Amino acid sequence: RKEVEQDPGPFNVPEGATVAFNCTYSNSASQSFFWYRQDCRKEPKLLMSVYSSGNEDGRFTAQLNRASQYISLLIRDSKLSDSATYLCVVNPRGDAGNMLTFGGGTRLMVKP
Amino acid sequence: DADVTQTPRNRITKTGKRIMLECSQTKGHDRMYWYRQDPGLGLRLIYYSFDVKDINKGEISDGYSVSRQAQAKFSLSLESAIPNQTALYFCATSDLGEAEVYEQFFGPGTRLTVL
Image (cartoon, rainbow over all chains, first blue to last red; front, side):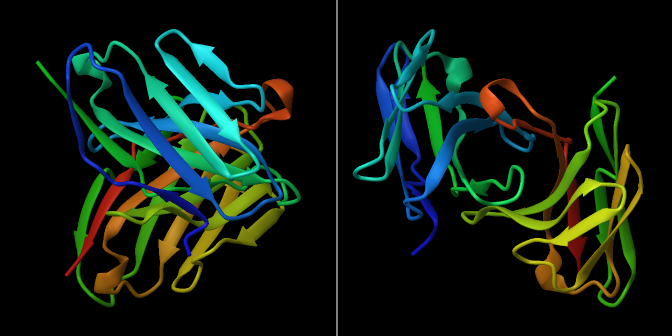
């Protein structure tokens, strides 16, 4: 079993749609969670951290369910510019420093 | 100018050749990392360094070596390249962020093809 698993997609949605991605992680001791965004042939960039209480940044909402060991990302009112691959990233506490484990990514394509 | 730069951006080489990928950063971060990315597999850690005197193996270090020449420079070498090392390679840096969360900042990547 992979440490961090994501549905690779692609998710094809029309502009304005709401779309949600889930991610599961295997290490129950994990403490830090993130969503990174990666555009085609570009480097990953931090989209948002995921906190236990859930957090929102504009049209993006991230949730964490520790009991079920999954993380979700909700995108409301999708824009064409949201088309990218979204990487679920976990940092198991106890690893030295910031040793991130990456999921394989979920590809989102927003259509006009 | 970009905070994390990588050279070369693209490289095609032959099996058995020695290759060096270079990474430089102007962010002043102590921590630097090398990853490779393969389709569907996500990013996998090759080596990491927490300061100039500290080098550590990551998940997939076999066939690779690194050198931390200075705080700002971290190089990855393939001593004898093989075709399954064809991948997209990323360098990253990190420092202490808010709430003790270390965000990683990535370079633009080096696309390496080994024939």
